[in-house]
Length: 237
Image (cartoon, rainbow, N blue to C red; front, side, top):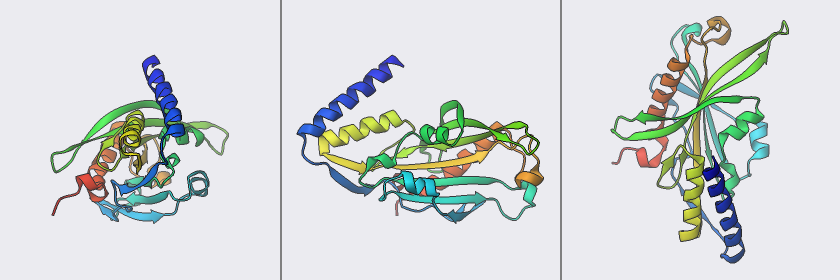
């Protein structure tokens, strides 16, 4: 923890000095992703959703936000799965991309576990992502509070690199700034689903899933989604 804090402090200090003596930074036009999420991903069909008013207000105006709600169709309501997916692509302002934990905390979620997981793709490549186990309390009509659990999986995509680490993303950005005087357009894909174990399928409209089943479902969806919009994972013609 001390070493990480020292690295961040050193990074901030060097960045401040370089901002004073370096030429104006060039905005990178190249993004490592397509600005779209597929409508169909395996058994899931995605419905487009508009960015929230909060997202529009907080993120820079040139930020691209793509969102879909993925559902498994053709089954009874209480046996479906639902996943919220989003893709945020930075413009010239790097503030578009940040640690998701910050936004989750602002939405009332508490991170109870954070770990890197591997997604093995059909191509044989392995994509590393970060899985956040999150929880928040929901106030019921009878005044009681119920813990509400979910899993939030994300990763960062640069022009030619991916990482599940925000610190590594910052260091890579620092490298590009120093060596090439370019601020590349990072992207930040994410998927999220509730842990529905113990919840009524009639009320949630979803099948009951444990923590493990929810994570497995999300990782499988990432394995299907990522090669459809992440350029370095897309099949080469």
